[in-house]
Structures are given as structure tokens and as C-alpha cells.
Image (cartoon, rainbow, N blue to C red; front, top):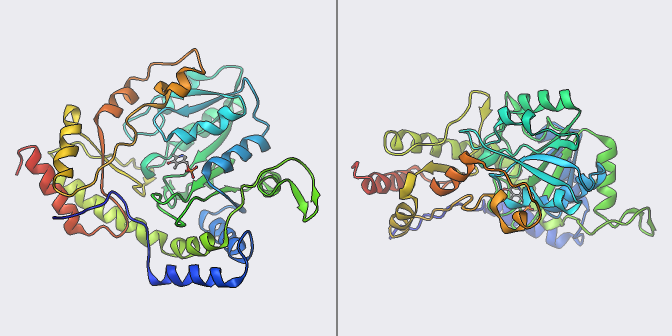
Length: 363
Ligand SMILES: *Cc1c(COP(=O)(O)O)cnc(C)c1O
């Protein structure tokens, strides 16, 4: 029987050689591979700095600290995102103000202004599933009200908004190299991109115990450092990222063509070059039955995400004013993620589409 995974890491001899080279170099943490990876990430993104850190979540925790986020501050954020998007701000006592989505599954920019209060300090748009959020509208609202914008790019490395790479437009961009993401390092990892020298310096200090040098600690920091082996692996992945992303887009074009008239497929806005971290269809009330039907045919699927963040116990316990977000609440019941990765063969896409057509009696 077929066995089509939901996603697959990029592993070639070039990757293996790079890992071996790092292993045998005698340097394991924040050395030459990390320096080179940071420089290459900054160039790729089009920012002055890229600061590697142990994962997205630790990076954002430091970003919020560097910016002085404090108890009572409010941050506008979509509810429809990975739970970690919301954690770092809560760790500093800030309140997530949940915004509903539009049909691109990114935050509905029409709802931003109405959610602003005197306590609002920033907007955290998420480029969900690899599709860029409507940044111009975020920036317009931010400018008018004196807010910062930080881009959650964890699912969108290589995506472009009006031709510009995501992570280069907000005050910071936050990336994850978790194994399912578009760029992986075979383990946890993340990076923060920024053009702001003060933020970059602060992050470099905080991630390494507040160090100025080996024996001098300027402030209380963390161990949120990055490993050489992971950097060596990431450098190879970054070299191939554009090809892998275009591989995803070829698979998506095939899915869209084959599924037309059978199920609603994900839209791509005219400002977007999406990199399809996920390929998400809508299945009405047939979602769970379809997932099982596909599983029985060796096709893995996922749900990103089955529980809206504003309805997670961790949130409802903490905050009194939990909003109603009808589009998000509807989406989480109907969405299904199909297999997608850079090297996904088109014949596998056809196999998946045949199965979906059969399920809906459209074969
Ligand atoms: C994966 C992910 C994160 C968290 O990344 P980690 O590196 O696991 O901390 C944050 N936001 C989004 C949208 C994600 O998909």
C-alpha cells in the first residue's frame, strides 16, 4: 500500500556531509557554522541581522523582553495559529487580543482598529500555512496608533508579500526550524531577523546568559543558543529552500487543478507568493470521515488546528473577555491538511486527489 506522509524533511548526502563536517570540527555551539548561517539568513531575508536561537518560542520571549513588553499590555494576534504564537507575550504578562481570520486564514485586518484600546502595544500577524498576512493594512493601522508589528514567519520561510521576503518588513521576523517547517535543521531551532541594531545586540546577549564576554555578565539571560551541527544542516537547506518551495507550489498547482469543483482549495491573494507550509482544504462536516478514508489508503493528513487558541483552557483560565470569532470557530471544524513537501511527487498528489474524488463520489 502507498504511504504518503504529511511532510518530509530534506535529507541528502550534502546534508549528511555538512553534519559530519560540523561534528568533526571540534566546535559545537555558536561558532563558525552559526555565524555563517546567520549571515546567509540575513542575506536571504533581506535584513541587517539574523539572530539564531534555540527555537521560535525562546526567540520571541527575548524579543518581547528586549522591547519591554509588560503586564497589562495588549497584543493583537489571530486566534487561528499555532499555540506558541501566543505563549511568549503571556509570559511577560501581556494579554493576547484575539482577531478573527479572513478567507486566506490570516488575520482579518478589517477587525484590527476596533480591537485597539489605550493598552494596545503591537500587532503579531501570522503568515499562516505559508501565506503572507495583509501587511500593508497592518502597517497602516500600526502607524496610526503607534504600535509595533512583528511577523510570525514560522510557517512561511521564503514567502513574499508584494515581492518582499517575509521577516524583512516588521520590526522583527520570527522563524522556526522545527522539523515540519519549510526550512529544517533536524531538531529545534529558530531565528529572529531585524534591521534594528539595538534589538539584535540585546538578543545576542540574552541568548547567552547575558554575557559581554566569557566571564562578564551584563544582565540575567538564558541559554537559548544554537548548535553547530544544526547550523551546518540548515545552511544546506537554505541553499535549496527556493527550489523546495517551488516544488511545493508545483504540487499545489496540481492539487488545485485536480480538486476544483470537488472541495474548496486555499486561495492565494494577489499580493502573495505563498510557500504552502500546509495545503489546507475545507470539508464541511465530512472532515473526519475523509481523514479516515485517506488514512485507510495510506495517506497521512493533519488538522492545523482543531482547537482555536481563544478556546484553549490555558487561555480561558487566564482571561475573562474571550471573544467570539465565528470564522475561526467554523474553520477549525472543517479544515484538513493534505500531504505537502518540496519533493512530493506529482503522482502522489494524483493518488491523493483520486482518493478525495472517490470519497465525494466525483470519480
Ligand atoms: C511552529 C510555530 C511556532 C513555534 O515554533 P517553535 O520553534 O516550535 O517554538 C510559532 N508560530 C507558528 C505559526 C508556528 O507554526
